[in-house]
Length: 210
Length: 210
DNA sequence: ACGTAAGTGGAAGTCGAATTCCGGTTCCGA
DNA sequence: TCGGAACCGGAATTCGACTTCCACTTACGT
Image (cartoon, rainbow over all chains, first blue to last red):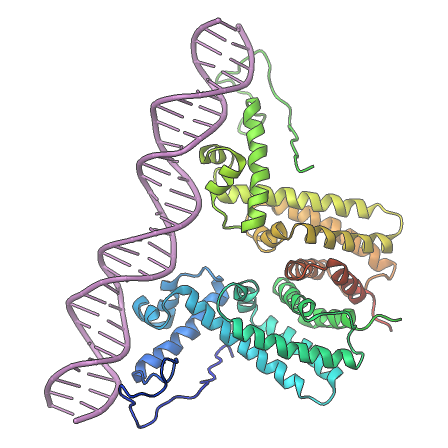
């Protein structure tokens, strides 16, 4: 369950080795790495997710390496620094959330979609309190800016739709909403019954009786 | 306001020096410290509060010492370890909260008292996001057990009273409530308009319309 | 099957921050 | 006013990570 492979952007395993050709100039284009190297990279990411989830952001690099069954050297070849590793995890995390929100965005009934999103998010949080706790403060500072922005704009859309239908009180900015989700995450981390919290949260967000 | 001196258990300043006498056996009895030393202790605590509030739990000891206008040596004479310093701050923090709850507990109208408590707590959190953020996770692990228990029992009383009057949904344990307050703290840390959050929270806690 | 560039492990180097130590300085009682 | 125990400051020590480095293995094209 924790494994969220996703082999995004596919693998440029084309037949053409593209030696020192004049292909994509400076971009982070394809990198025909050796098969096992790529495999190790995934292993490291998976291990990092698990270890960080349990020990928090100050888990030791060596611990992660051991958990992945590789040496620290390998770990550092894939991620030049601890921050880089965390950032990559953060990016994946945000991309996953964005996908969920995007799905809710195209659902027919805005109100229902909104409610479902809140509940499923709460469930997800309860399922992996470790990572949630870890990313509660971190992503703001380092990389992940693009992913953050993407998620936010999607969220804004969802919120708008819900407010347009009167399902959510109109005074409630995207920033407020994000803060609230952060709060939800913190609450769930401390006491795991997400169903109750999701209920209360939805009730609280409903437009106040005029 | 922040100073909580409390020269407990008085000072056994009897004429007898009590050499290797059989006075108080092993207890942490009186400690007739020198005047300036006590003063410095307070200064350190105040400085620690401020610095930790700004830089978080991983602020450097030397930074705190400098802010207090003393050397690190002095700091370590009062608190044998960084943890000890943090723990003391945590204890004071919890005692303060307990005092607030206790006040609400003796108010005439349970429902109103509950609401006022939530709102004032939210305001306090917004006023000192730094310390709230710091104690959101910490106190659980280290000392502060007694203070934690005290606060919790008071909270239980308050919650009971509010539920008895039907002001708060009956299914809501003290643990849930504490988790929710943690969540509120996190939300306020990320977006400071505590009034909105307090409103929504109160709405959410209200007993659902049957 | 071979050569070699890419990849690997983990010991050793670095560095930042907590904690210790001790010569000098100050309160406080007589 | 004096003596000395209590206290100070902050340089030096310790300790625990992160990160670097390099001799040794592999995967993989030919």
